[in-house]
Length: 102
Image (cartoon, rainbow, N blue to C red; front, side, top):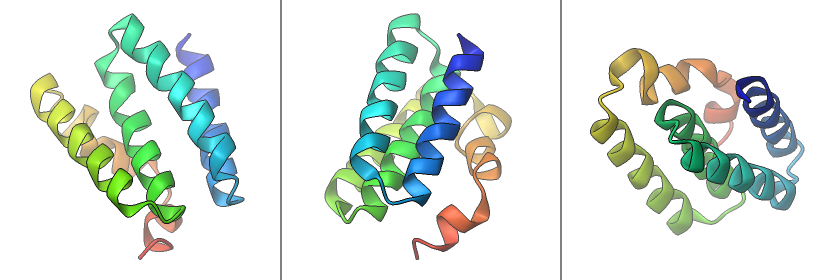
């Protein structure tokens, strides 16, 4: 299931790059629900970050910031720290996704 999750996240990032936000959001929602059901907090953080970023790039700022706030709370509550949490996700995502959004 981890490989499926990584593949899905990669596909969502590609759709985000192609500005196919509806498909990106739908796939990330499925991945989010799957990780949540399985109790995989470490998988939820990158999915939440990608979901927030995709909403932001789609112009839904309020939704994006709410998701980002949830993600930061999840990271803090999980105790993942720098390596497995938000900082690790930011290193994972290509700089162009973040830089292009500013």
